[in-house]
Image (cartoon, rainbow, N blue to C red; front, side, top):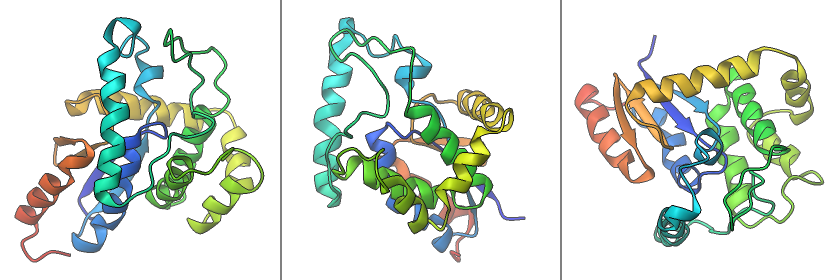
Length: 214
């Protein structure tokens, strides 16, 4: 059995989006299994993290992720609609969340089908790449197809009770146990690597474990 690199990841996180190209390629360079573990956004898991009393966090992220995307040569546009329904003046999270739970459960289902990171790559590029109304028409279905998946089959699977909420709860618990709370967080051999800009440090650690590469 190959060693595992866990990837805790959110469909609303621009940094998760920025991490997907390099994350997807890790198993090509090192003999590891990359296990995609989607979690709900921090704004849903911990609504007090972003608040009117601490606007600098949100303001910095909105500046920083765009310039980082430009540096990496990736498209950079905030998703429309936003994957979570939130009043950006009061930072209040709506009780009804029609997008993020579906996306997250679909990500879990994609991982169960062995195509988790591929699905994350395609969908995140849809969301943050400038596709307006990404939730309508055939946008998600085509993204799933590019990842080698059937969206209708996946939607049917996540409609079944039990499995996906349980896996999501386990992902949340394991992220907390990893030593970090944010996304993207990679965990290898009990060691967390937080942030898109720590993939190079993860690769350095993997190279120590696997000097000959993949």
